[in-house]
Image 1: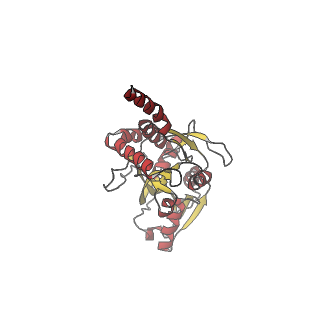
Image 2: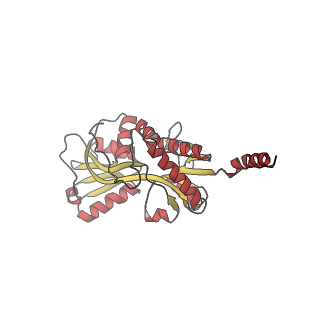
Image 3: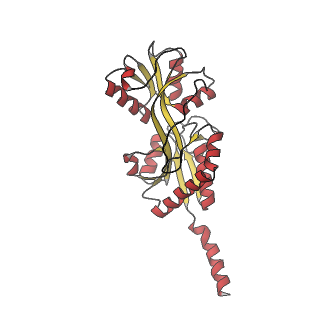
Length: 273
């Protein structure tokens, strides 16, 4: 009787021990976006997140028995909520020393790259910062992408950039020839290809990779314990090993990161794909 009662009480306690997390992201297709799509305005209420990162997190939470709410907000609001501990985490994140002050960062899940794009037929190819001499490059910013481009231009002391309010504007201006004879766009490769498909834009030529990058998930240091973080990160590792993560990313035409300890390299793109 005592054994049965003890087991019964443990069953009752089990759901109470499950984590209830809220994680936030931005409208950042193809990695994350509001279910039903659409642009999130600066003062918009939260929208439920969709996309590959949401699917991965939901599967990991389901296997752990967690209740996870995934919401889309304008990025500055989302990041502020996560950094100040008002929510439990944020995705998709680049791992930086600054981010590690606020987050326990998971293993990387998706590999992509920052690339230059030109109109078909142009001869510009990027291999080193000196190749940017005389180029005028459109980029969305302020953003991590624009900061990367600024650093490249400063190293070469050559070329100029033009900040735009969003990535679609960058591509449309490039296609219209608004950046001039020596114009280019600088953008996340997968974002550029997604926009070309989604907006039915003419094909652009990838003219070189500047940096391979990888995204993961950040859990709040003030809200999520080290033990809970490790359990979550270990579950992400299980999704990598059993192929679930790669299967999700494949459906979204994205490249899965290698398991921990293996080198990270983005696969080369195919112009016009």
